[in-house]
Amino acid sequence: MSNVKQVLNHFQLAPHKRWGQNFLTDNNIARKIVEECHLNAEDYVVEIGPGLGALTPLLARKCRKLLAIEIDRGMERPLREALNGIDNATLLFADVLSIDMEAEIKKTFNLEELSSFKVCGNIPYNITSPIIFYLLESCPHLAQAVLMLQKEVAERLKAQPGSKDYGLLTLSTRYHCDVEYITTVSKHCFYPQPEVESAVISLKPIAGKRIQVGSEFQLFSFMRVCFQKRRKTILNISSSHFRLEKEEAARALQGLGISPQARPENLVLDQFAQIVESFAPQEV
Image (cartoon, rainbow, N blue to C red; front, side, top):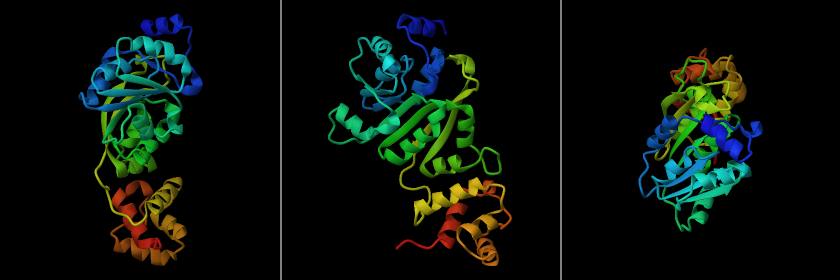
């Protein structure tokens, strides 16, 4: 921690609450995160939120090219100092959610085509879900993302049916990728110290689709409604959402092998898809 404080004092900087800045102080955790990226000399890597550079030089030394995207322009001087003598890293000062990441990689490294890339970062707690959805829905060439985030969110990503953590984030992530919970990180490993524990996870997008559905929009719309009304039965939610008589909806659910009295947290992804495929009007 003293080193982080010294760097902040040297550059007359202070952590910004608005950007959720909690700087990693544990070098062992930093090395563990980089190891989990399984980098080689051909990899292109994007680091989200490099901050003071706890991960940045470690990543740069193991990959072909690194693009570090930081929202806080005040981090430029400590980052450039951390990257002194390293010539394969580029800094981009921008809001990661406001850019086309893949276009920026190609532009920065003068690539005509991008075959794949990896993402690594210590993600601000207040924008964790938007970043995850952005990576999974808007980055078709993403090979892996190794992210440090709030432990509570990591537990939701890995939650099993029937648990309180199981919900829309769980299912949406599972639709797109495989999730691995790597390690828990104590709040004492950061400065300033956050109020909660953190965790490191790995996301690996799957090839093709986890399940086949006629309309992803209808599937995600239905799941969103289900978890907004998670205390209601799947019968009540389905009949209301698809405008069916309860008797008709109950027969259809039973025909799918789904109990009409089940709650949303009891269903797996395939079952949500079955309901949508059976109940929703098919798009032409």
